[in-house]
Image (tube, rainbow, N blue to C red; front, side, top):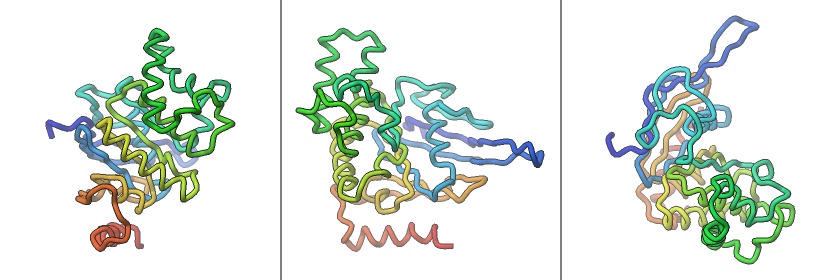
Length: 254
């Protein structure tokens, strides 16, 4: 697929078990293509290797076998073209920095001058609806607001690819729903390529254009793909939504 921004070819990842002198596969023969601007969901049960695969795309973990290409470059380490958003904002945000300072952290590392930093941080703080909270510290924010800060900080560094590891998993149901809607809005405005990990089927169908189903580990791989041809915002009460839900649910009924 020539127009794929991310290309994964026969990727495998092993780990050693010294006590039993054996090597086991976390992931085995994973293949995946993600198009530019696509919202792609990695869906599977807990422990199936979704986060491992996402960390490999990020460049935090190296593959044992196979090839991983992003932006026409083989991924061997983290890069500015890929930004990562984690489930726990508390472990990602710097508690001693304000919202504005957290959003500008990467820009400061790049030695971008103050006036430009101000302009960029204001744009993304506005984009994630945090205007008026610029000078608050993370401890003064709700869980949803912290995730907005995390999103603004990732976007401020202008990556082509946004990698999201169950970013709304720790939020309450109402906040999660709001953040899902906000993410769709931001994605449409920025046209980023998103790879989003979740084990929540409803969340996958509310967000994704395409869903890859991962098998239970070990030896996990993507076994099925679903194109979700539903208009945004999506309504969980429609017959089409529930038809796709039922089709995918069958993969998890053992």
